[in-house]
Image (cartoon, rainbow, N blue to C red; front, side, top):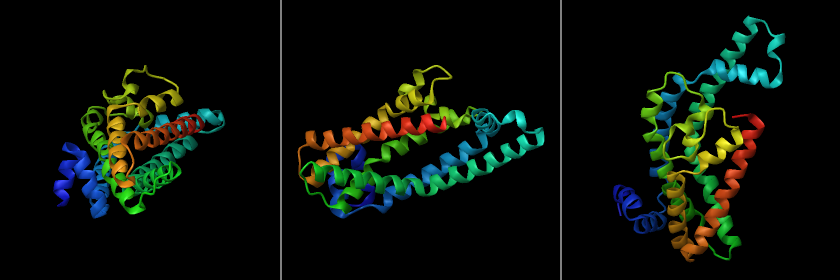
Length: 233
């Protein structure tokens, strides 16, 4: 099956598309697609981020702003802007591959703990293709970004009407915002695709594969909430 056919089937007939991807060990094409879209998203996001607001928020958290001169504050803003741009573009360049590998490892490990014996490369293929709906969500979010001249990256998830975060008021605690951002139609779509694909790879029922995916989703969400609480982002 060709790559274009696999791409179409992942969205139209996921059982067939993901099975073909796993058997073909198709890994690179979805990662390249995800990386390209992530770079476009970063190119739209970075010029619109309110870096000064982020820098001042960091200074307020360490209670150091009162001790800094206006020039030092400007230098801090410039540093945050440079580091923010580098980290955003860097994450866009390598993030898709890293997330696919990490997701594949934990799917592989989780199903082995559940008594199955999935191969790692087929698991990586399923993870790479199964994560594409999340990339599609990023693409659909571009119009909302283009409509905002100043964006707080901590609240990007709240711009998506398919996310529970969209219904939360401004100023919501970062932990709750992280939880709500994880509850969205596209993350559910990803979870369903991963369960379908891993059921084929591990030769287990979709219920067992879905249970493993659900547990991993809950753990990932908990880690996101902890990180948001620690960093305020």
